[in-house]
Length: 320
Image 1: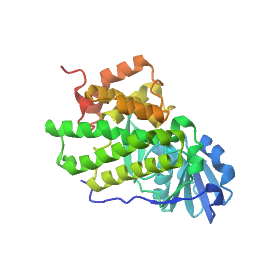
Image 2: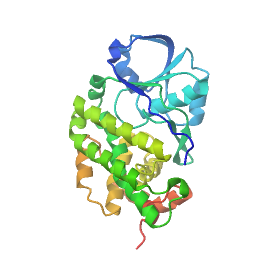
Image 3: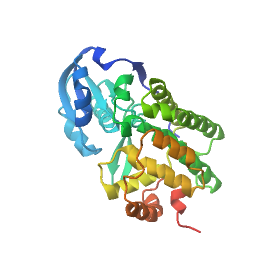
């Protein structure tokens, strides 16, 4: 178990157009996100704009020397904030995050996800100092990513099942021992996510706020227990594996969403409420070709063992 219990960042609701910061700032962003909101950010003193295209440590290191000013701003989704957390840690600068869609939980976490040897690994970086939420901006995001962070909460359904499954098989190491109270809390967060899926998918302010609450609670629960077993399991393993076949162009939700349904089915769960929530949030389940899905499922047990991923249903797919 981690000796550090990380905090959530400070979160404020604030219209981007009304935000003022006189400090010279480096903006870490993606092309689409910057194009969507740059005209609203006239209150920033932008010294440099760094566009990120890949979750690769070497690529991020190459940006390090281009960081200038007194603060880093992450503008966009998970890729932008993960790179910005890395650069803020490397340069010892404060970090402000401006999400343009609720696409992932990375706005609240202390780690940056990177691709390495065909899998995703998490580097210890740092949480943002401040997350600014403009609900009008979030509501205006493309529907397929507007509330795609729902996947990082719906994955509680399959991740917690895997955690219990591993406990029954004696496969949880001491650092990830099963905690019934944490499982119960995770179940309540999952229920709250299912409850807000339709409103969040529409872009309603209250629905988006409830999804923010679910993402923050899920992250802090994992912070408290020192690992992500309640919300990360075989559904994420599927996403990591299938990305090697489809390339890096698909958003996080397009990979994890199908993983949730496929792994819940393998676990014998009723997938109806999960599918309903994914549909309500406009998360596509058909972006991966059926042949690629079947090939990935066939290779998944070997993949999870090769990368020493925590035990779950993925380890025993295809067994009698």
